[in-house]
Each structure stands twice: as structure tokens, then as C-alpha cells.
Length: 466
View 1 (cartoon, rainbow, N blue to C red):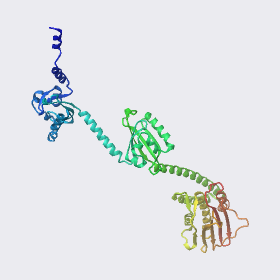
View 2 (cartoon, rainbow, N blue to C red):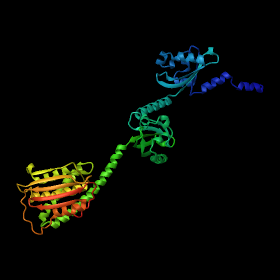
View 3 (cartoon, one colour):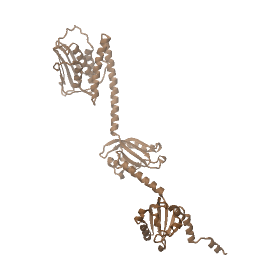
View 4 (cartoon, rainbow, N blue to C red):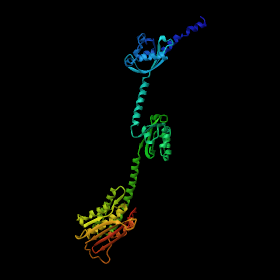
């Protein structure tokens, strides 16, 4: 046998080679069918994929691999017609196995070169990939529904902060279109003073595995509001390569409350320190002026009650001031003991006192009222008390004149050198020292008369003279 004959005998023919390839491609279902879709060949891959043997399928209709609903919709006919016209037809759909189970197949039906001989179809199982893709689409759809219906501004971004998507809430809040917001265009809505910190936080985020910052974001009307922005990678194991999802939550009002809380805490600490200093000074002066421990206890308790009443009035106001009328009414009510309203008269224009002024004036009124209950207008049947206030005469007025006037009082004889008690020292020395007030205290023939001229505005607290 010649060399050429031996090569010819060893080399398969084209038909044999094709058959060899088809039978070896077990991962692919490959079969041929005539123009009427009757199967003419069926490889091992087709047997494994569809469950039918070659003997069962050759000579039978290939339509059995289509689902009933696709056969009812004439999918096999339409696929064949397209392949006959265009030379090929793509096919991605659910198919049937012999046992009735379904799988997602990606296939291609091609017209044979000799069109009269029919078609060849190649199909492959892609159920796992299809289910994964469907799950991804469903997850994306759920994400879009969630992201577009929550109050937060939602976004997708690359690990360096380069934005790839922004929710409708972001567009509506900032007025920036999606195109304007992509890449780093969204930074235009961040307050200029916060941009460097925002970009630095994105650089750190890749190492930390999360992004967090509080910064100001411009609203469409041009105003800025504080937002808390957080972001995390969709795949925590590939934070440097995957997209990140983030939200921006409006915390402007919360920050305002926090700032106000800090101011209130500072004010409370300041007021508490001052109040303790006042109590200490009051205790020292009461001890010095008391004749006994019993007298000290009674007098000191009354003065503490006066401080407590003014603190209660301060707690009701939001601007840390006290209405003078409320202050006078509270002090008189605490001492009048149910006296006839015709015995006491008080009133004046609306006046707000600072906390320092209110505290000092309240203790002064307490001392005057205590004396009136013991010896004066509130102790004697014919006595009457008038407490009024008015702006000082100068224009514009920056002072309030408070007048305490008792009448109808039978005053006891006073010694030539009367002893100055705590109340007298408070009114004549402490109030001028603490409030820069002008005071006068007189014991007339028919009762006590006291005038306190208080400057309006801020007042310091210097409790030591008490």
C-alpha cells in the first residue's frame, strides 16, 4: 500500500469528522431536522440534555422539546421560518425534558447549506445562569423600588466616590439632574467648606470598608441642610472593585436640637453654679443676722423658697427671662395668706427680667413681704400694700422703676440707731452691687416704702454681697 493510500485510510472523511465532533460535544445538544422539523440525527449531548434516546427521537417531531404554551403560540414554526429566511434563529426559552421538568436553554437553529435538507440546532443548558440573572434583576427592581420610595437620598458610587446613579429624591432635593450628578458632579451640591472633608472621607472609606460623614448639602432653593451620609460596598469581600450603595439622611433639625441642648446644658451649669454661690452667700448672711439656730432655719428656709419660686418661673420660659408681673404675683401669693384682694394692689406694663435680675428682685421682694407679714401692711387690719412698676422718666427709657408702698400701718417707735437687718442690707447694698440698681428704703409713719430702679438688659451675677 502506497504512502498516500495509508494516509487516506487513516484520515476520516468530512462526514466522519463532522459526526465525530458532534458526538464528542457532549455538553451541547446537537441535532438535525428536516424542513418539517422531524429529527434526522440526535447526538449524545441532546440525549443527556433532553432525556430522549436517539432511537426515540430520530423520525419524531422536534417540537416535543418545546413547552405546551410555546407550541400553542407556534414558537417552533416561527423559529423555523426565521431560520429559513435569515439563515439562523436565536432561541432563549424554557424547554421540556422527557420527564416533564423544565430548563432554560440557549440555542441556535441554523439552516443547512442545502436548505432542502433542513436545519441543525445547537442548544445548551443555562438554567443556573438564567435563574441567577433573574434573581439579580429582581433584587435590582426591589432596590429601585426601595431606593425611590424612602425619604433618604440614595446613590450608587464607585469606591472613590465617583457616582454612577442618584435616586429621584436626590434630583428633587438638590435640583441637579442625573447627568449633572454623575462622576464627581454631585460634589457641586456639597457646601464648599465641606468638600475637602467629604473627599478625604472617601479616600479613607476604601480602607475602613465604609463611608461616613456629616456635611451640608445644598437644597434646590439654595439653602444648605446638614446630612449624614453613609455608604458600604455591595460586596464586602471586594470593596475596592465593587459598587457601593449609600444614603444621605437629613439631620439638620437634629443637629439644631443637639446644639440647643449643648447651649441649655451650658446655661444650666452656669445657672447652677451661680445659684449655689447665691445660696452660700445667703446662708452666711442669714447666720450672721440670726439670733438662734431656730431663727436661722426659719429665715433661711423662707429665702430658699423665694429662690425656688423664681427658678420655677425661669424653667417655664424658653428665653431665660421672667415676666415681672408673674414674679410679683408669685411672691405676694406666697405671703398674703388669703388676704382680701382689696388689701393688695399690683400691676404695671409688660416687663421681662433677665435671670440674674429676676433672682435678685425676687429675694428683695421676699424680704419686703416677710417684713410686711410680721410688722407691716399684711399684719395689720388697716394696712394696704401697693406694688407698681413703670419705665423710668428718661427717654428712651432703659430702666424700670419698681415701687413698694405700704399705707395704714401703725409703725412702732424706732431706736435712734436702728439695727440694719438682712433685708435692709440686701436692698440697700446687694441690689446696687449686683444689678447696678438704684434703691431707696424708707420706714415712714404709715408703712414701708421702697423704690428699686433696675437697668434693663444683661446683668452679671455677683452673689457675694448677699
